[in-house]
Length: 359
Length: 147
Image (cartoon, rainbow over all chains, first blue to last red; front, side, top):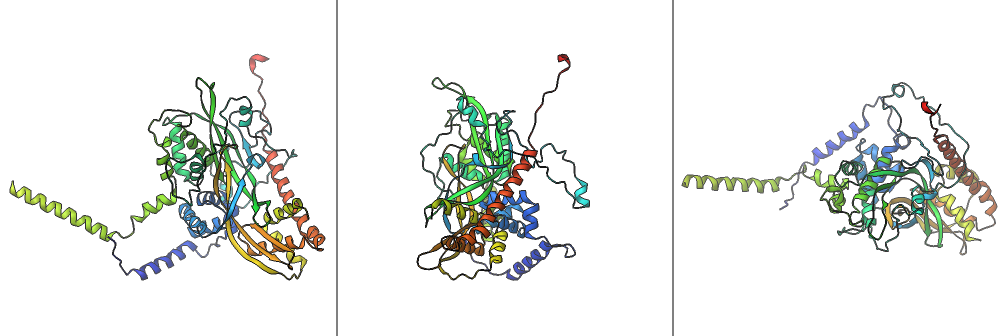
């Protein structure tokens, strides 16, 4: 039973005033502006766009500032704003083969057309704190070299040609937008991928790691990982002309997993897929591994009863806004609920006492 | 007017750096009379990906888009569909789209569209040349027993 309770207004207002002051911090230190956040905390901005499910760097930076750097709170703000936007339409499917790559690597083939390009990566750094950053604003400039402006083909397309890997063929199944329709299990793969792409990075990382450690083992290689800008094509309704309406940064991961075959099909590798906004490769790889482990039915694998295979478990719990909403609501007043529980416990204890006296 | 060229200018206007487009337009100092068909509104477009590059389409997430439509006279209409939430950028795009259908076409092309193309190509070249510098050149070490 809910009973409306009044009061606490002054306390709430004053709490929010203090929040505002503490967010500003020491006023002798220059205030952060949105552009500083969007230019210098780019990977936080990317994470908030990815899990907030809305690509807009300024809004993401604003959300990070407003939330004092609490990224889940920032994602919450993005999601809330997103729901106020009228949906103008849906794009054509993006062509990641035409990506303007900042980075493109393969862990399965050394020599590949288009070559391995590391891009701006933390890989191979020593993970030692850089005290130079503490001292001054100096930085190294990126080196440049002459290039060929050629499309970079997907690595797995080479395995495809030999029939060594399972082909990804459109299933013809219709999928719903999970942000506009209730979720009904079992889901299509497209619905799962939408959910994973906006899912919590930490949760997906944990699940992906669990598959590597043996819970639904399907030993994964990173067939290809690429980060860069992709043109989003959209048909202008008034004109019927398709234009490049937005340039969006994506990270894409294609995993190559343990093979399987049957009497009819010779052994071939299988694959998982990750595609996320921004330069979030830990999440893209995690997504590919979890996508793959949830495909057990499609590949006729055994269900081992582990978390990463269970789409209902994964999809119902990967959304950090749903999760935190339910988790954090228990700190809000539950006085009446608790009063009922309290009464019940007292009653049970009284009955217990009476029974004890009788015997 | 060919659809192909309109597609091109609409694309460069849509993805233009907003501050750059605004400064190009403001420098032209043009006074254009127009009527709104649809005042600028902020919305979103759902971006679709393809599972495993070639499989089923799926929704990745939305991108903010601002759009507006206007007319210079009864015949000529301009549409401003642009990335982001800048209403002024959207209005400039619609005005440019409309003017590209008039005798002012050359002015807009020379002072705005061509510059946007150049700006984007420069950005592209910058990324490609930096990416190229991080290309891995593998080499195999000669082993002792091969000597």
